[in-house]
Image (cartoon, rainbow, N blue to C red; front, side):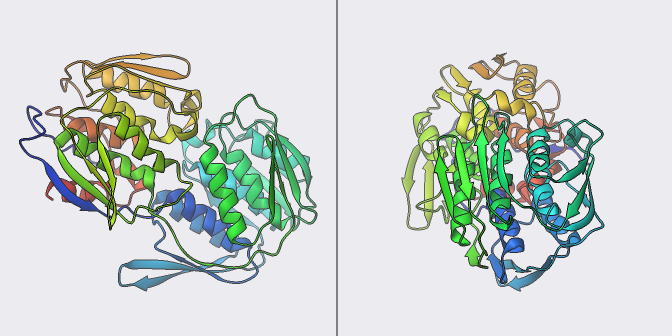
Length: 431
């Protein structure tokens, strides 16, 4: 894929060329893929309005369709909706998970409800990402899975067409998606499911809360205890729902206002949401931005100051690359901690961020689960590598606003969660 030159301004002086832009962020990947799963398990059809179409969500759609779920596209004036009609799921089928955590972790439990052989495979990086907690949990529930003893992709599920249910123990220390995957399965089991988290820590709790809220929207009954969740067997009811904009994807656009000055207004920012990205309002405020609600959404304005931050990002780890990029341009030092689990994402994000910022002349010290960032003048010496990671690519674009000559390798990887990041970026910079 072609390299892409990140837009930049030579000699950063925020007041000289401020941005004044309104941005519509496409739908949430996390909400879209959860809604697709729940709609597939429901007893009646669903209509998902303004969903995201990206590599991750397209893989989820194709995976569910290969199991026999009827998903069609309905064109609208502003884009499209998904119409989802549940069907009995059957194998044989082959499912490509790409490098999508939600697909590789959410779909195997659902595929176990199908009758027949369901084979899962994906990108090379997907072989390295943890999947054992989901596989072991399904085996505790009596599901037969061929994984050659590796507990990783590729794997084949021999579905019996039903799952009795029961109690499972899972170590979700490396990803909250393991809990969400089993929560989504719960209503479709015969006796329900009780999930007990046995790990030392649990990252990204807002994502689990998002899963629970969406389950309840579809009619599921969920009881939450101390590191435990119980989901009773329930006939889910199809929904007509609007997918919220992906607030995590708003991070680079919000950062642009801080770096360039002026303001960026994110349209349709929800007033109440469980999305981790909503915490950007507080985080960027502490880093010097002016954040205010507007009639149309959320407005972020630059104040000519970017401050460092000392913050635990365990619950909102996906925001780390954008925050680290802004921190590299701040006036004071930053420490981002509680993020050891990011080493197991699309790439080892701690190592990648430290390497790429330091390649620009930065001073980033990488700890086991933290980054210490000391701002220093940055100079483009080589291209900013994306590591096939969409959030690394957008981090490079953020830094490219302030550092002349930054070239981001393979900006196309942003299609994982944003269909046209370069187009949105250019529109923002052009007002």
